[in-house]
Amino acid sequence: MGRNDATELGYPSPPRMHWLLALILSIATAGVFAGLWALVIGAWLKRVRPQSSALALYLIFDVLGAALLVSILLPQRVHLVAWLPVFAVVVWIIASFVMRDDLMIHFNGDEPVGLSLGIWATLFGSIYYFQSHLSNIARLKRELRESAG
Image 1 (cartoon, rainbow, N blue to C red):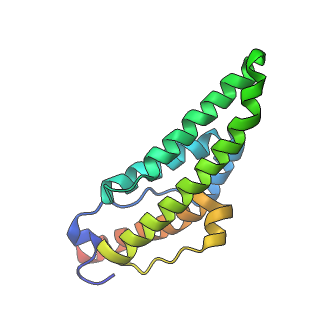
Image 2: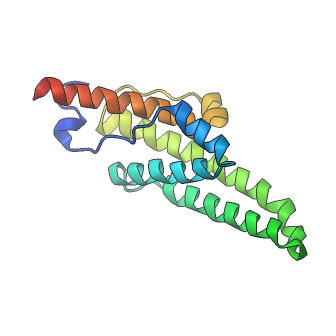
């Protein structure tokens, strides 16, 4: 980042958490943490890129997840259980690619750090892949602030 970096433009630093910790917490909570952390990243992205729809899409995913849990707990609604996971996965994938596009627009335009995000890594790594990059960017921004101040 040059002297016209995000620190001077006032963009907030991305959420900082090691991607492996996010993955471990997601596994430990049977995926609940993943849905919540996606909202954290989406909310941050909405602050730096207000036109992003990633937050809304991840919120829809979380609502679908809650509906799936309710469907599983209420046996009389078993027919819903079959379609909810498929729909939730489709929403998650769409949200991940929307987030990918918005992150690349932001970090190659407004706050240029030369971010490159792969398609396959986005598909299979999703928020953990994004978080690894966001943690590095947050660290870089912190180092730049400390060296400037």
